[in-house]
Length: 152
Image 1 (cartoon, helix red, strand yellow):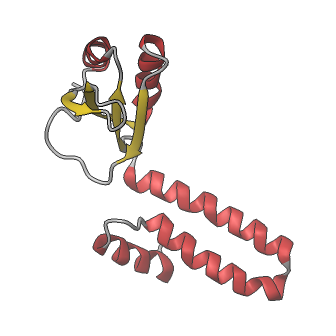
Image 2 (tube, one colour):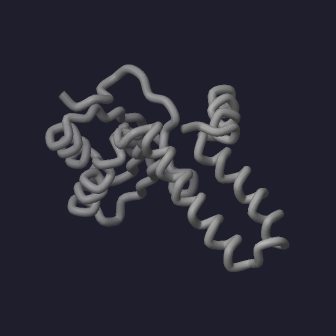
């Protein structure tokens, strides 16, 4: 059952690319519990904040699902092998573009792929196995459309 907080959070999250429902509810509840801190005491307020933090993360998981997408950027001397393993083992598309090191001036291939939350471990294992010194960044994506995003 939704109360006023969740309904307000749903409305705000639809208009904002940055704030998710769980984040809005968490912010509201932190303000609420900091106010209640004076009345209830520190221990009760801290337990309440911890409970609502867990609930906010769970709500995001339920709304956004297990297939939340993440972007992986890989810079490695072994980019050909890494790309082949990701495309063959995971069935994911990999975009390859060229970049130049700002300090070294060396041209390198940069790999970019989109994977689900559950595939992050597989991708990092592939990278670690083939090139432990690779530079890797992973960040969550709010929206993905087109390309090879779903494994068939």
